[in-house]
Image (cartoon, rainbow, N blue to C red; front, top):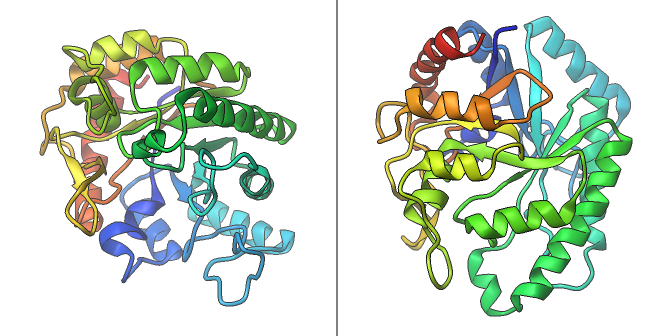
Length: 316
């Protein structure tokens, strides 16, 4: 079966698009016209989402709080001929590491998991929420213990809803060293828990060592990181890397930049075969991620054409 191709809808709602987001229907209609098979849902305004994390859904754009609303969205997706490849849960307003009470995080995860179930989405993305500098405030063992125990609960919730959980490690969040990634994956120890491998983050974490606290942990090539993570990868994002980070509002490194294919240094004819050998996925999706790219809308067609070529060569 050939790989299906999707793209993260957050590329058109956050970062450069935050002040002028592209509505979900416009996104989906364009994706269909470009031959995409689906979309990966960034479940935060103004795109479809389960509602305001603070409880009130008044003036919360895109909130679908009723099952009937969610069924209407499923019907629209069928009409458009698109499917959901996964969901990025809106958990960034919650604390994970610098509190000993993760109940709000877990409650928000549960709400997103139930939302995903209603939309027939099988994969729920998580991250460590807080920046790597948080480990200057919270000791390593305590921080890791909080992440692990919280994600174990989240994985059990997801399992009850027929879903897997995928952790997107990246420079902008805590536990961004290869040894951290292995240690946390081992400790969570749930069959439905795995790693989201983004080729841009793989470069910045595994080769550049961007935003790693203390001594850097890097490899000579990204393929070495992929080998280390073999059997643990349950979701894949494809995009180039130029060995730099996206800058925050103050000009400081935030997380990996996501340049379109051909505007970075990655050799996908090397990476894709290695990822295919190392991944342990339960689905047939490859997802393009143009997060924070300043002209993601214009770059979408070029990226789709590149991934189509990769699918033709490696994706069958």
